[in-house]
Length: 238
Image (cartoon, rainbow, N blue to C red; front, side, top):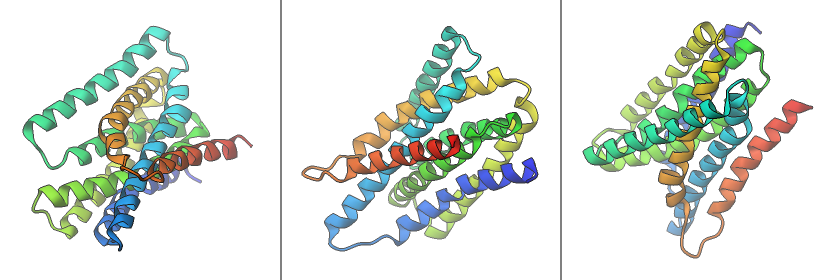
């Protein structure tokens, strides 16, 4: 397949799970109430597992190639600090879009890295696209819930907004393919920066929302999300 079409297909696949997650969130109403609550927490945990899998299996291993230990540490740490600063800014201004902005901060650098990986002919591009799709589904779910609870946006407007955000994926992917492919060290720095930010987000925003008193299934969602990444990597290696 033409690499341009591959980038378009993979980034759209990854991005369109955001409005799909929002669609599930606006349709999902289960009874009894405890089942709906447990399902929501399990979906969030699955997304956390997929995010950790993307960091551990793709972004960090690929990002560290060709970079010194000092530069690796600086890029990774700066990602965590940058996400913390954004988080503090959003908290200070009490915006209803903090989860949506976190979703964007994960999605854009990953899509750039995906486009560059396609230019390198790196087989990890397919795994990265899969993990992006898996993580964007629960992130879209959670961001929809936050926007509906704290803003006056209708279901339709949120779905349209998330669909437009998904279209940023191909733009970021093409940018990585065209301009960053000759600079693998820059791509590595972006991957490590995103990794540090994602790790901050998982433990600051997602993980605290997963736990339920006297419920033990939601953490299994995180196990399932990470296991999905492991199986994807295993399939690519054989």
